[in-house]
Length: 189
Image 1 (tube, one colour):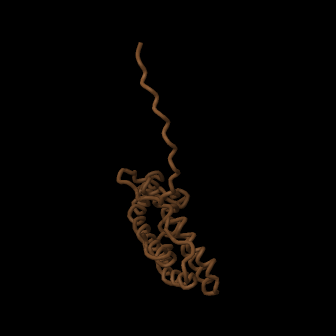
Image 2 (cartoon, rainbow, N blue to C red):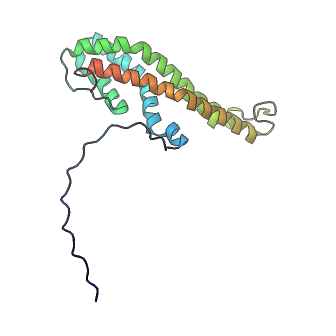
Protein backbone atom coordinates (compact mmCIF):
# COMPACT_ATOMS: atom_id res chain seq x y z
CA UNK A 1 0.00 0.00 0.00
CA UNK A 2 1.46 3.37 -1.07
CA UNK A 3 1.63 6.27 1.29
CA UNK A 4 0.16 9.53 0.10
CA UNK A 5 1.94 12.78 0.87
CA UNK A 6 0.29 15.02 3.45
CA UNK A 7 -1.95 17.77 2.14
CA UNK A 8 -0.41 21.21 2.00
CA UNK A 9 -2.13 23.90 4.04
CA UNK A 10 -4.23 26.31 1.99
CA UNK A 11 -2.38 29.39 0.86
CA UNK A 12 -3.29 32.74 2.34
CA UNK A 13 -5.47 34.92 0.13
CA UNK A 14 -3.47 37.61 -1.62
CA UNK A 15 -4.41 41.25 -1.58
CA UNK A 16 -6.04 42.51 -4.78
CA UNK A 17 -3.53 44.22 -7.00
CA UNK A 18 -3.97 47.75 -8.20
CA UNK A 19 -4.75 48.20 -11.88
CA UNK A 20 -1.60 48.84 -13.83
CA UNK A 21 -1.04 51.11 -16.78
CA UNK A 22 -0.83 49.50 -20.21
CA UNK A 23 2.73 48.51 -20.88
CA UNK A 24 4.72 48.63 -24.06
CA UNK A 25 4.38 45.54 -26.18
CA UNK A 26 6.81 42.73 -25.59
CA UNK A 27 9.13 41.81 -28.44
CA UNK A 28 7.26 38.53 -29.01
CA UNK A 29 3.94 40.16 -29.91
CA UNK A 30 2.63 39.74 -33.42
CA UNK A 31 2.57 42.52 -35.99
CA UNK A 32 -1.24 42.58 -36.08
CA UNK A 33 -1.36 42.87 -32.29
CA UNK A 34 1.04 45.79 -32.47
CA UNK A 35 -0.98 47.42 -35.25
CA UNK A 36 -4.47 46.76 -33.95
CA UNK A 37 -4.10 46.17 -30.18
CA UNK A 38 -4.80 48.68 -27.40
CA UNK A 39 -1.18 49.79 -27.82
CA UNK A 40 -2.40 51.36 -31.07
CA UNK A 41 -6.06 52.21 -30.67
CA UNK A 42 -5.70 54.15 -27.41
CA UNK A 43 -3.17 56.66 -28.79
CA UNK A 44 -5.15 56.87 -32.03
CA UNK A 45 -8.40 57.51 -30.15
CA UNK A 46 -6.65 60.11 -28.00
CA UNK A 47 -5.19 61.79 -31.08
CA UNK A 48 -8.65 62.11 -32.65
CA UNK A 49 -10.48 63.15 -29.46
CA UNK A 50 -7.86 65.51 -28.01
CA UNK A 51 -8.42 68.31 -30.51
CA UNK A 52 -12.18 68.80 -29.95
CA UNK A 53 -11.84 68.22 -26.21
CA UNK A 54 -8.92 70.65 -26.11
CA UNK A 55 -10.90 73.32 -27.94
CA UNK A 56 -13.94 72.91 -25.69
CA UNK A 57 -11.84 72.93 -22.52
CA UNK A 58 -9.86 75.96 -23.70
CA UNK A 59 -13.10 77.87 -24.30
CA UNK A 60 -14.37 76.77 -20.88
CA UNK A 61 -11.12 77.92 -19.25
CA UNK A 62 -11.32 81.31 -20.99
CA UNK A 63 -14.88 81.60 -19.67
CA UNK A 64 -13.55 81.06 -16.14
CA UNK A 65 -14.88 77.51 -15.76
CA UNK A 66 -11.67 75.87 -14.56
CA UNK A 67 -13.39 72.79 -13.12
CA UNK A 68 -14.95 71.50 -16.34
CA UNK A 69 -11.93 72.52 -18.42
CA UNK A 70 -9.53 70.72 -16.12
CA UNK A 71 -11.85 67.71 -15.80
CA UNK A 72 -12.18 67.26 -19.58
CA UNK A 73 -8.46 67.44 -20.21
CA UNK A 74 -7.55 65.27 -17.24
CA UNK A 75 -10.21 62.65 -17.96
CA UNK A 76 -9.09 62.14 -21.54
CA UNK A 77 -5.40 61.85 -20.61
CA UNK A 78 -6.11 59.42 -17.77
CA UNK A 79 -8.54 57.19 -19.67
CA UNK A 80 -6.78 56.90 -23.01
CA UNK A 81 -3.11 57.51 -22.20
CA UNK A 82 -3.01 56.19 -18.62
CA UNK A 83 -1.41 59.46 -17.52
CA UNK A 84 -0.86 59.74 -13.76
CA UNK A 85 -2.58 63.10 -13.35
CA UNK A 86 -3.46 64.31 -9.87
CA UNK A 87 -7.08 65.12 -9.13
CA UNK A 88 -6.94 68.67 -7.79
CA UNK A 89 -3.71 70.63 -8.26
CA UNK A 90 -3.45 74.24 -7.22
CA UNK A 91 -4.17 76.96 -9.77
CA UNK A 92 -6.39 74.80 -11.96
CA UNK A 93 -7.43 77.70 -14.18
CA UNK A 94 -3.84 78.68 -15.00
CA UNK A 95 -2.86 75.05 -15.62
CA UNK A 96 -5.92 74.34 -17.78
CA UNK A 97 -5.26 77.47 -19.86
CA UNK A 98 -1.55 76.67 -20.21
CA UNK A 99 -2.27 73.09 -21.24
CA UNK A 100 -4.94 74.18 -23.70
CA UNK A 101 -2.74 76.78 -25.38
CA UNK A 102 0.47 74.74 -25.44
CA UNK A 103 -1.13 71.45 -26.49
CA UNK A 104 -3.34 72.86 -29.25
CA UNK A 105 -0.74 72.93 -32.08
CA UNK A 106 0.43 69.41 -31.23
CA UNK A 107 -3.16 68.19 -30.99
CA UNK A 108 -3.99 69.74 -34.37
CA UNK A 109 -1.03 68.08 -36.11
CA UNK A 110 -1.61 64.72 -34.41
CA UNK A 111 -5.34 64.70 -35.17
CA UNK A 112 -4.74 65.56 -38.84
CA UNK A 113 -2.09 62.85 -39.23
CA UNK A 114 -4.15 60.20 -37.43
CA UNK A 115 -7.39 61.07 -39.21
CA UNK A 116 -5.83 60.96 -42.66
CA UNK A 117 -3.91 57.79 -41.83
CA UNK A 118 -6.92 55.80 -40.60
CA UNK A 119 -9.33 57.20 -43.22
CA UNK A 120 -6.92 56.30 -46.01
CA UNK A 121 -6.41 52.79 -44.63
CA UNK A 122 -10.13 52.18 -44.17
CA UNK A 123 -11.27 53.62 -47.52
CA UNK A 124 -8.39 52.82 -49.87
CA UNK A 125 -7.11 49.68 -48.13
CA UNK A 126 -9.80 47.77 -46.31
CA UNK A 127 -12.79 48.89 -48.38
CA UNK A 128 -11.01 49.22 -51.73
CA UNK A 129 -13.63 47.25 -53.69
CA UNK A 130 -16.35 49.61 -52.44
CA UNK A 131 -14.25 52.68 -53.26
CA UNK A 132 -13.59 51.45 -56.80
CA UNK A 133 -16.96 49.80 -57.46
CA UNK A 134 -17.65 49.68 -61.20
CA UNK A 135 -14.25 51.12 -62.13
CA UNK A 136 -11.74 49.43 -64.40
CA UNK A 137 -8.91 48.19 -62.14
CA UNK A 138 -6.79 46.63 -64.89
CA UNK A 139 -4.27 49.50 -64.73
CA UNK A 140 -4.24 49.90 -60.94
CA UNK A 141 -1.71 48.38 -58.53
CA UNK A 142 -2.21 44.64 -58.37
CA UNK A 143 -4.56 44.62 -61.37
CA UNK A 144 -5.97 43.36 -63.69
CA UNK A 145 -8.30 41.63 -61.20
CA UNK A 146 -10.16 43.25 -58.33
CA UNK A 147 -8.72 40.70 -55.87
CA UNK A 148 -5.15 41.57 -56.88
CA UNK A 149 -5.83 45.30 -56.71
CA UNK A 150 -7.48 44.91 -53.30
CA UNK A 151 -4.56 42.86 -51.96
CA UNK A 152 -2.03 45.39 -53.24
CA UNK A 153 -3.88 48.39 -51.76
CA UNK A 154 -4.47 46.57 -48.47
CA UNK A 155 -0.76 45.72 -48.26
CA UNK A 156 0.25 49.31 -48.93
CA UNK A 157 -2.24 50.45 -46.28
CA UNK A 158 -0.78 48.05 -43.71
CA UNK A 159 2.73 49.19 -44.55
CA UNK A 160 1.66 52.83 -44.13
CA UNK A 161 0.12 52.02 -40.75
CA UNK A 162 3.26 50.17 -39.67
CA UNK A 163 5.43 53.15 -40.60
CA UNK A 164 3.26 56.03 -39.32
CA UNK A 165 1.60 54.61 -36.18
CA UNK A 166 4.87 54.81 -34.21
CA UNK A 167 4.88 58.52 -35.06
CA UNK A 168 1.33 58.84 -33.70
CA UNK A 169 2.41 57.03 -30.52
CA UNK A 170 5.42 59.34 -30.20
CA UNK A 171 3.25 62.45 -30.59
CA UNK A 172 0.69 61.22 -28.05
CA UNK A 173 3.51 60.34 -25.64
CA UNK A 174 4.56 63.99 -25.85
CA UNK A 175 0.98 65.03 -25.14
CA UNK A 176 0.93 62.64 -22.17
CA UNK A 177 4.07 64.22 -20.70
CA UNK A 178 2.59 67.68 -21.23
CA UNK A 179 -0.64 66.66 -19.49
CA UNK A 180 1.25 65.19 -16.53
CA UNK A 181 3.42 68.27 -16.22
CA UNK A 182 0.65 70.88 -16.53
CA UNK A 183 -2.46 69.12 -15.26
CA UNK A 184 -0.79 67.03 -12.58
CA UNK A 185 0.94 67.91 -9.36
CA UNK A 186 4.37 68.04 -10.97
CA UNK A 187 6.84 66.04 -13.03
CA UNK A 188 6.07 62.48 -14.05
CA UNK A 189 7.17 59.82 -11.58
